[in-house]
Length: 139
Image (cartoon, rainbow, N blue to C red; front, side, top):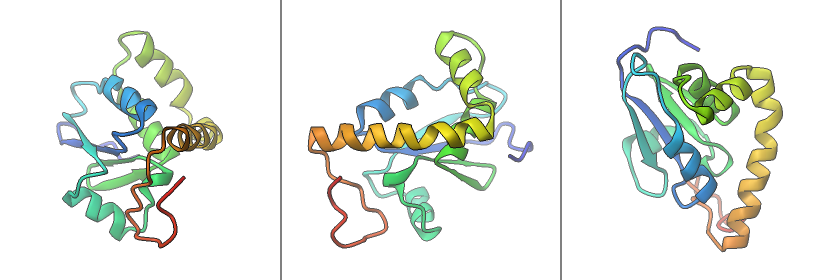
């Protein structure tokens, strides 16, 4: 992860209709020196979502953090968030402790994604399908 992002806006692109994703993203507390965090609902068109799509990143398979001109996807996104998060509060400390390791993040993320997909399927929420793949509207 690049270290020269201090003070720049950080974008977190995620599925706001996923209750677990929304709760996680609402709880993220970025260290004030890292820069302001802006949450972006991937279900609404935006310049950053267009950039995510142009890079071929499937937002249904992972959240995206844009920081310092770089896109971090899935496990790399939660790892990046952990590294720039504050350490105040139980949630922030736990988030840092679990996801500070890129390796651990990559090991845990598939299980989190599977739980998310099962939750959204149970709730009857459709996929975002930002890549426009036919037949991939449902979980």
